[in-house]
Image 1: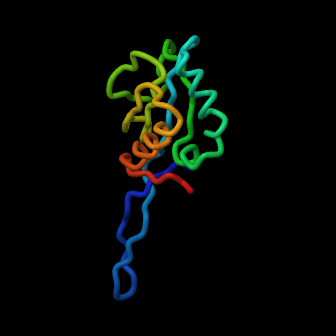
Image 2: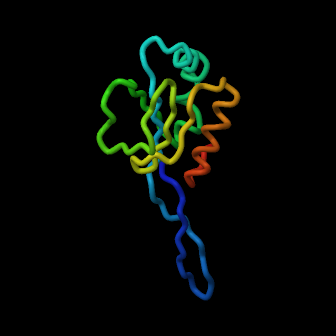
Image 3: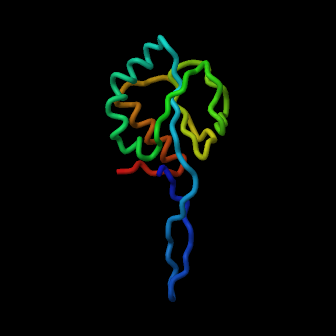
Length: 124
């Protein structure tokens, strides 16, 4: 469900047990616009693999036109000025972003780093 582990302490009989607690929903928004060649390249190189990836399970992706109003409940750290931009949201608040499309190999690495830095785990 795109939740991240925060951690909670639960006391057992005579010992301390650390159990995960869930907080925050991670989502990824791809800001794009018609005619963006780098967006088209992302769709050709990453798009087919994304729905079945571990990253998609950890941070489901939505596409958003750069010229449209922000979806309700989304708070960005700063405006998006060009495309593509991939913004990781934690409960609707920007937790990080990848600006531009760096190619298929480096893209996966950067998205994994965003998810990890937000306290999430790439679902395996």
